[in-house]
Length: 273
Ligand code: LYS
Image (cartoon, rainbow, N blue to C red):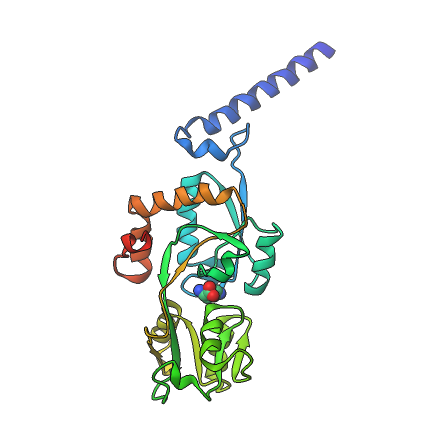
């Protein structure tokens, strides 16, 4: 009787082993590079601020957007499973630093200042700040922000740019936890302008024509910025994901996602300069 049980147990183990071997059998590309002995891929935790459409935002409770589709392609390329956590913008920075998340993905501009504390991937998106105002506003350039109430998302390049024009401790600079809330403040008349990333402002204005906002470009004051994945300094993931990003840029997959969101082809070469 004992022997029967033993054999039965042995047979079960054998079947399990066989099934799990089959599970990875079809996976003959190098996706298995980040798999453990059972063919189980490692899961990376990605932090974001999902209030920045079209890059990352909530749709029926789900985090969606350009960044999400882009990172899905990158993770597939690198052979990782992943989970995106909506940690919020300000908390994202310490979360990356203390390892609560493996990296940040949040339309994060690569800046000298941030590079003192973090490592960034190769750039994956070009952006520029612009000024969002109610239609007919007398604000027509960055200099015109002088003396106006200006909304920014706290801790963004928008804040830094406005501080450069208005002075660092200017009380007229109103800082909000998300860009979405800054835009709401302009709807309520609490601020007269919002400075944020062009793609976000343009998308908002064209999706909400009845709010009667317009965008003011000022390339003299706002230089191009590049988004990157943000890692803890010294993270091994950087080299690995740079390689995956470059593959996604080169394979045409990036252009496909980009066109889906923006309706025209990206300048992939410009990202590589
Ligand atoms: N790209 C800007 C920055 O890095 C804005 C990002 C805001 C994301 N919620 O500061």
